[in-house]
Amino acid sequence: MAPRKPDNEGSDTITTLAMSNNAGSRKRQYKKVQRLDNGTVERRAQNQRDSPLLKMPPEIRNRIYDFALGGLTFRLQPNDDNEKVANETKSKNAIALLAVCRQLYAETAVLPTSLNVFSSHSPIAIHSWTNAMRPANRASVTNLKLSICIFKFKFFHNLVVRTYVMHRPDKGMFSNLPSLRHIQLCLIVSDLTKSTKKELHTELTCDQLLLVALLEANGKGVKITTEWVHLKLD
Image 1 (spheres, one colour):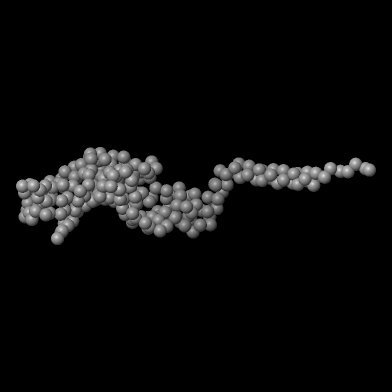
Image 2 (tube, rainbow, N blue to C red):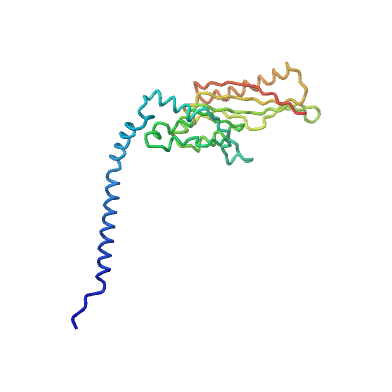
């Protein structure tokens, strides 16, 4: 009987095809990696030609970015131990613009932190939240809002006590924010001692001056604005 051809001819063919397919896929992957930088440049040029937004002058694009990404106040809420901080402001698609293409990301990556306000009643929460940011975003924070509650009440033997509900800001607490330009200080006051308006105004003015001095120690050029909110408890 004539010798039979090996039965693995078909498998050799399959192996050859698989190898050729693998080689082709490897070749394609190699081309993608090799052309990654050039491809990125070419797509960017094509985006500039085809995108109505990217064809606009930079000044117009910046105004659009301001409307799309700015105007928000992110409220930062710490837990009881100030160990974790959560952002309570939920805004759908707040930063979706950053994911459109590489050029838009390059132009808008730090705008959500530079155009918006970070607010909390705890200075420690703001410090912890901003410290957890990427350096570029942390360096672009410009506006903070700090709400501090001050309670005035009578203690034992009619001893009048004024206390802060949360921590006062420490000197230099926000010195990790080199671009900080504005701190809104909101003082929420509850007086349970029935003080006269003159007495209360004198005492709270001292509190205001102390807090402003502490905040101004965070660096030159930081503007402090103050507002009072009188909380009435029945």
